[in-house]
Image 1 (tube, rainbow, N blue to C red):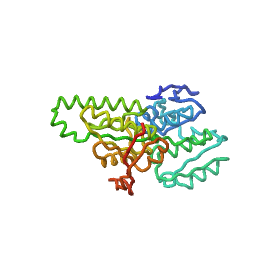
Image 2: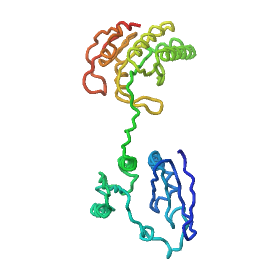
Image 3: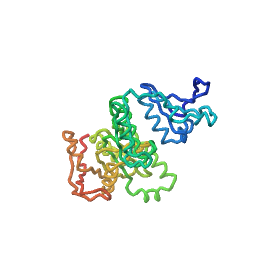
Image 4: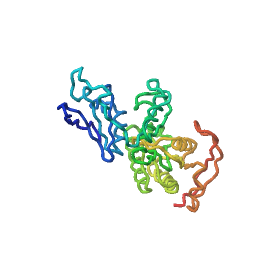
Length: 322
């Protein structure tokens, strides 16, 4: 459904060509824009195009320019249809939805209510806001009401949030190590470090989110696997002459553009920053989640994590149980 749909033409009784487009499948939904927003130009605005695709996701969306506007045939000014001519003979007998923003300065609320009372069984929904243009302001609420009216159901709120255990690792003393080894040797050592982490994370059914220069950010679908992976990485990098520290936290994260975001990510990073060489620290939410795993912890007290409200209990992994 990406791109601009093809513009087609139909003839009216006077052989004038009426421009229209059809997108999607389902119940017919006719969209008649004003002359200010002809159908061929609407798709050039990414936000509007996204809203139109949302409409087409639950309907067969039909867009048309009225005669004398947009891509439809021009007509002599004295023959230009006025709105009265376009609607002559139109009697609304189908269920009708009227949407109006309470603060609209172009259409008064009294007018909308009069219109609603004049249409049998019309449903009037008054929305917050003062925008007259439908695709300005809280457009999601507008589209939700249309979808509910047309299909009888409300859409589930889309979300990219998932529950995940986030792991941060960091090479201890990386700057000093780079100075000791020199650029070429350090680059080779860092590449070996990254390959090692990739191998262990994949083996624990985790995903590398990104490498951070001298560390890594990964996510896992289970905290026990994440802890075992962190401990295995800590032990394995010793063969490369490196020491790491690690921090983990389990919480909801937001997936976007191949990265993860959210408070849970910040907490994991802050906990890692508390770790010493060779330490694997976890937040206090993790121990209850791994009961029965034989992973043991040592209390490291409560800490105020930078930028995160309240104090957070932090624990060190004593035995991964792997």
